[in-house]
Length: 146
Image 1 (cartoon, rainbow, N blue to C red):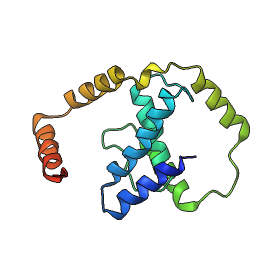
Image 2 (tube, rainbow, N blue to C red):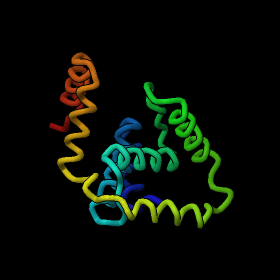
Image 3 (cartoon, helix red, strand yellow):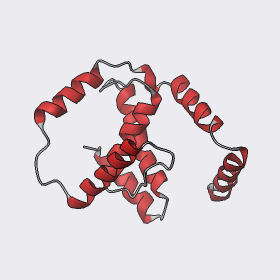
């Protein structure tokens, strides 16, 4: 369950008309903090981000699945979006939830370090075209608060 403050920040972003990815970023930030606070760990920065995006979809953020993702990832994203729309009807399996938490608790906390996150950002940017990166930079500059 996302923190109350995170949900409030997401609502504020939504009211201001910010994009779905900006709203989802709040959940990713929350997840990074959880790993840093030793609530649980993760194998990589990519996993931390994936957990955050999953939480965002389940909380109702209209986040589309990634274009270049595998079929399984796209199906999972669709499943999470459906789950958000339908609302929780049954209680989550306590055994499965506990097992997942136990597994994450055994993982490293260095996945949310500045080094790991910057390394992930660099490798993600390297996979994009120069034109795509340039477009993003221009958009960021145009929408930045003065």
